[in-house]
Length: 237
Image (cartoon, rainbow, N blue to C red; front, side, top):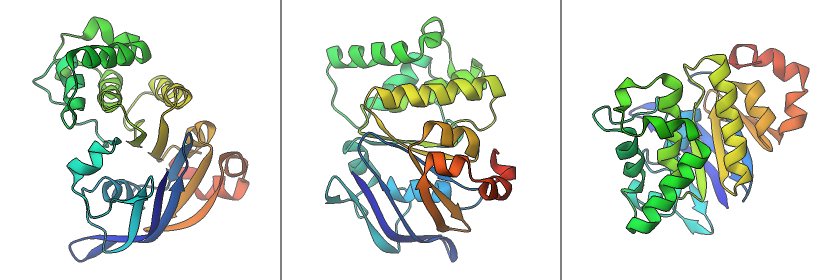
């Protein structure tokens, strides 16, 4: 479904990722793991077109997309939920959710169906529908951010550090939600520092260090790898 081949990208003169290759197959949850600054978020930004690749290529459903604009990539239903939630503080929960359809032409009937779908996944948002997003807790804001991504009817949902800054009990809820979303047929590319929980929901995972992929394996193998646990001790093990 999604194939990234030997991409490199920089911020100015600073190389952020080098020769990164990964693949996400339909129906999978694939985790991209690494410590802070390893290149995880940069990889997602290159896939979604927010950062241009300098080398390599990115294909989605057999179409090359690495030279498309972010808007055109989004229209392919590749949805990027960025780190830090980035809600519109002056908009209500409902208005923030609707912003997820901004790159798509959606009928009123379809819009209401999508809103109902999001509320089915996040029932706790229903009583908060008319509240401004700035008034929500961190966990509630993350629900809105993921829900906004789901409003775009993603074929693949890319989540960047969804557990960042959340209380442990909320983190567990977020990962349960990721599993539920995948069970509903959405393919997920998950960027996370919390390696332990990520490997519990993922099918496969890649480990990135200093901008390079250093390992790829099935999630269960990595979850029980004692050497990896020692290496990733500061990243969720």
